[in-house]
Image (cartoon, rainbow, N blue to C red; front, side, top):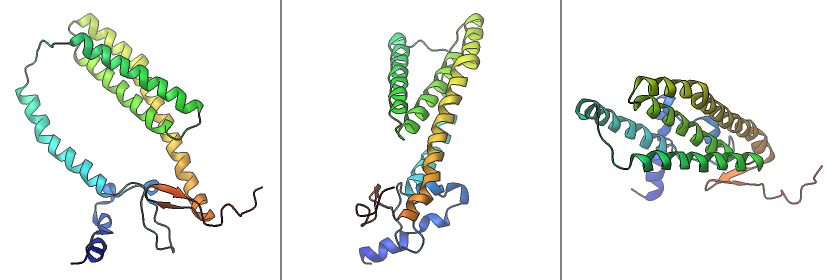
Length: 193
């Protein structure tokens, strides 16, 4: 089979996926009537994530059944200090991206939210005493989880704005080529308001 025929055979395979696995509208760059169907993110990436999740199910069960309830850890100080240093770097990145009005702030704030949820989880789950558990729960519910919610809200707001801009860009003639936004050929010649 020729490469063109093979590509055509697999070009729209994602339409056969269950609806919840199909890529959201803001990832699609197919333009109605133009024949252009390149996407910013390839739908087969969803399949990679889905298969990764499936592989992790038995592995997670094995961990729950075989790991000891208590364990001494080497480099405990470096692990937690390094994690908090990573939070400092990500929070700084959030501040810089937001001040620059960068759409990449969606990515950095989503990472910050995920790290905060992870921090809260491990603080609570690894508390050795009742007093430390209470302190970890208070920290999680009063600081870490609300801040994570703020991070996720910020990320979703930026992504929502980008999704809202998509039909206007399409109407103006913009396309996506190799993951980059391409203006129409006559864009430079068009009068500006």
